[in-house]
Amino acid sequence: MSAIEAEDLRASYGDGADAEVLKGISTSIPRGRLTVIVGPNGSGKSTLLMTLARIMAPSGGVVRVEGRDSAGLRGRELARLLALLPQEATAPEGIRVWELVSRGRHPHRGFWQPLGAEDHRAVEEALELTGCRELAQRRMVELSGGQRQRVWIALALAQRSPVLLLDEPTAHLDLSHALDVLDIGVRLTAAGKTVVTVLHDLNLAARYADRIIVVDGGQVVGAGAPTEVITPELVGEVFGVAALVVPDPETGSPLVVPRAQHGPAAVRAAVEAATDIGGAA
Image 1 (spheres, rainbow, N blue to C red):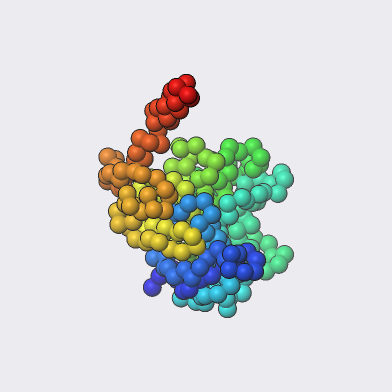
Image 2: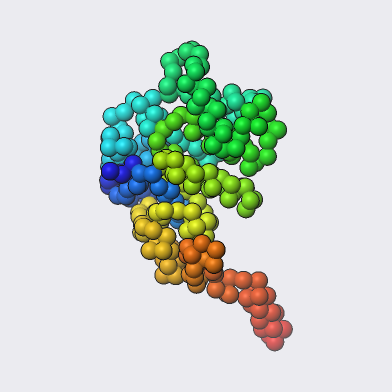
């Protein structure tokens, strides 16, 4: 059974056909694997993630999480099955790391109910898994971007939901911190979690994903293992980039190498050619 299944999923930002962002998507997320959603800007990949998480209500179709129709689940029931880290998460002013991560336990407690022993264990485990234990008493404003992102992932992990959705978790991070975040995703799937993340970088997606879903124009145009999906034809058609796709010398995963017309030498040659034409005129 898949962790998440979507059937004929539709979503809109307003009325009319032009406002429809998701246009009948049917796809599945395998349990215990790292799935990456990719696509050009405006393709609907983040909208797909938000709709799977029920942050955005679909205008049509069905989403099943762990075999259950999400439309029939109460908020806390869904939160026990699925945790979401949005793209732009903000922390209350002055909050410390441990307190923020402990808020992931809300789906398991009643209003005003104090944290119990199980809640403390869940928070400590989440901090340990994300390498944030030494940050527990630091304030969020004191942390680097990479540290903050690891703390936000710890917050989602504290929910102890079997499915974790991450919307562009590597955005605004340098390469080292981006790799740290994706390494956490791999460790989580090794421990049995299902992780779904939106990424912009095709090469990082190909290196880390067990499954890639390619979205374009509000529809799934490719899905499968990286070696099946990341091809020169797809990169050209979906992203408008002429590229070679070769095996990564480190991992063997597909490596996208844009052709020279998009490189600095090609740009300089085009400028020089235009200057020569102008001078001749």
